Image (cartoon, rainbow, N blue to C red; front, side):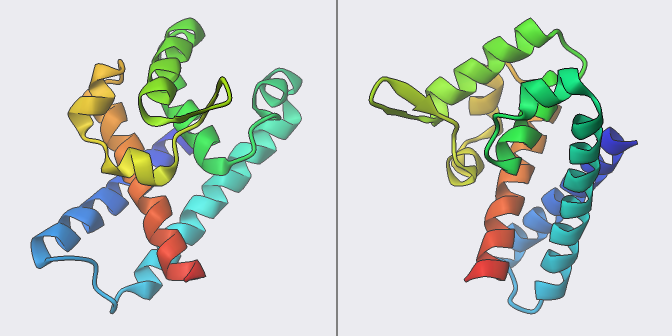
Length: 150
């Protein structure tokens, strides 16, 4: 249920993003639509948190995450593959798009991932569909932040 809801929301965003690119950019006439996407994504995040809060094994894996965006990208990478494979893919994404500071890698920002291409993400090991989800999610976060906080 949650997985399908997240896929549908990202697909809606991707379609919106394609319409924006065909029209020359995002329209200022659509803040209600952006807010609606943001609210649906927030509801999905709350459902995901309620699941992780109830399960100590899942909670221990995600409790150190400081950002919802990171948690969603991790959830996308872990779908239908082993955790070991997902970890290797995620490591490649972090090393390719993240920042290396004082010997540590920071998770890539939504901006960095939204500027990447599907092919770049696929070179890290994501399937085409997962790469599209990550791109759409990153673009959604940027759009939502721009509309709601600027």
